[in-house]
Length: 569
Image (cartoon, rainbow, N blue to C red; front, side):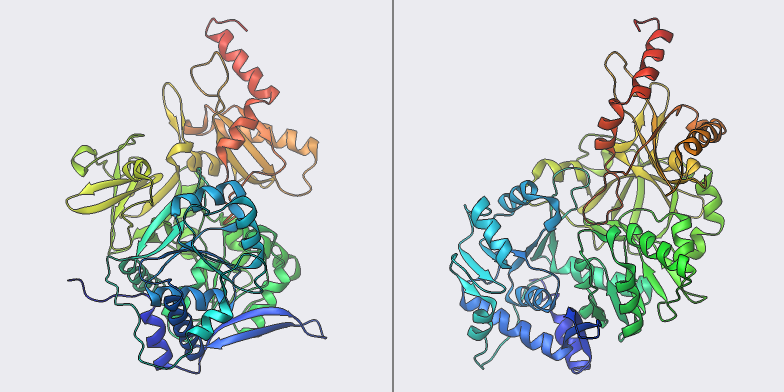
């Protein structure tokens, strides 16, 4: 029988070690001087409250193995609830609220939750839109209950307040702990099945990879990452922000929180770092306590990294772990490396260095295949220096998607009893074993004589000082076998139309200087790329390609190609 393993056990350990140390601060408005007011839980308070919630949940019929949809805003309640669910052996289902009503309904139907815990607006939406109608039998409201019945969280806590012997669920490492939905950046979000063993392995890998020490103070701008903090012994400072719009964060609120609490660690998407860094650079802002910034969701452009580092003390680093909801972390690197030797290679089209794979992971590059690969014997491993699919097996690799057998078959390979995950990304390993990221597999532009990969192409053009970022797409036009390689461009603020025309000519000249970018001869200005909800950093290239296909420049390029091939214009 597997040894008992429950991710919530870390919280109890920390509560015994440092009972009065603060676990979490959450903003609750402003005082009469305009300063942010906070409420907080100590480690012991969070542990005891989550105990009460766990006992109350079990009394309400929400126990071991019960799937529970959780739609609660980041705050003290979300932390206490999540750990209470783990302690009860229940399975929280976590879905980003920003994915849209339609996708939320699809995700909840797939997850088949038996209970629904949400704030009043979430319950109202559930009742009107029928979310979970087929399976949800128990309702819990965080806040005032209106017409939908069930319990309030306060009632659940009261039910669990009775004294008596108490022990958290004796789950095993292989037992399901949670269902975490992907961001949906490449389609409808998929539910990733997490076990308690997966969570424990993630905590240990993250602690070791970033040398995190108990007592650190964290400012997480992505709520799910914050749930690791109690296990790592860090104090969480929840920022004042809309977590579904990190690119639109108010930099002053982020900086005020860093200053007020002496924040040492921060997680932020590249889009958030860009917003805060631009604001800080204009004003000469400094954040002397912040020594570690972790950014994920998309590669961090070098200029964004430099701007943010300028606000920090010497020796501080921006870390960029590589991974996905299905496998995290896979590899890590930091600003010292990325702004050194690796930067020149990136600017010349090598892709983005994501560092050495962690020792616990086995990363291999295989030949690109758009179909399922049943076992590792059917995959052709590529040598160092050759671009292919990135695959990984290791202790944090998840084994399946919930109720998505076709998606699971496409993403997982049997590797001698271990599960090897296909990251859905392309890349290569260099002579030292470092991994280089070259974009999403599904975003590559396949031509008759070559394949163009997004990141190696885009970085060649993004060295131009008028360019904010670019996106390579391959719109399809009727009558052509090949897509039309097209570079969409977001300009820096204030670049006038006549400057753009000159810059496009310069970009064309840049592209002509590298073999892998020579086929790109169509350039389109775009007012603002569509991006993912979670990080506001992953570009929705399929949507961008549809837009590009309607543009006159693409149609003209296609007509010229047809004429050159002897077809009708």
